[in-house]
Length: 390
Image 1 (cartoon, rainbow, N blue to C red):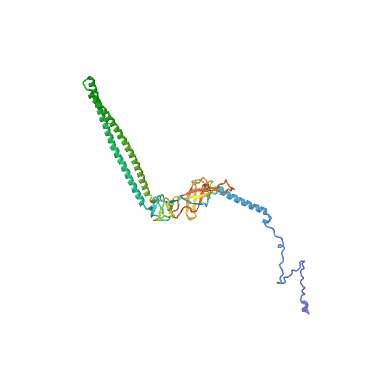
Image 2: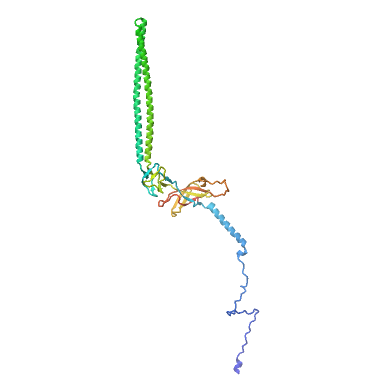
């Protein structure tokens, strides 16, 4: 009994009473759900974009406008270059054609071969032209012989003229003697020392001498006119000679045309002539691309405001981007490309729509690379320094 009295008496713990009802338990898991804290129960604050959408939109517009204005200012006043991809390599390529007809005897070049000025490209069979030249030379010799014959005839006629002149002098001397004889006979008759018959005979002799003098003078005139006729014949012979010489020169020139040579250094492209082929004068045998090439760049008309001849240019070839080529602006065409086309635009008819025109600009390179093949039509991208850099 004593032991029972000494055991302390324990009171049951009092449960704290709260105003909140007990949280229900989850029937599946048997756990109580998490109670929200006072901080979680507060509403979330709206973002900056939702709170100030107008100001943010205005700020974005201002930034975009400032960027566009700065870019425009940079392109207009600070960016010192103008470039275009509407550019290509250009040259004055032409067709090589013979100036005479005939069969091709030799072809001395190959496709895409580089030749120098004066190198032989083709040879045409020369036999017909050699025969024509020999015939022309024969006509020249014949005409020269005619001229020489006319000279000889003129010389002979000149001798006849001199002979006629001598006969005139002889007739004049005989006439003077006859005049003296007739005068003495008349004086003797008047003095009674001579006879009338003698006087009449002397008078008759005088008349004969006068007739002979007239005949001699007529012979001189005839001989001189014959000289004129012979000189006219000589002039005709000389004209024939000149014609024959011209024909010979033409035949010799035609003979030289059977050899077709390169007029300048360049490359043979699209070779079509073959040995044994009969060709006509003017028929194309190959295309020829000279070594002198340049860049034709079609800039927009708004890009040539500050572009002037002599400005430096950097050229990049699409086919060989690793090769850096420098050059300069040679000239700017005074007009758009369409103005010189086969069918230029007529803006006065129909509905007009303004289109930015392209202006061809010629650019020459300082040195073209020699280790690659460059020719007309290849695309390039030139960059012109139109304003000096600070």
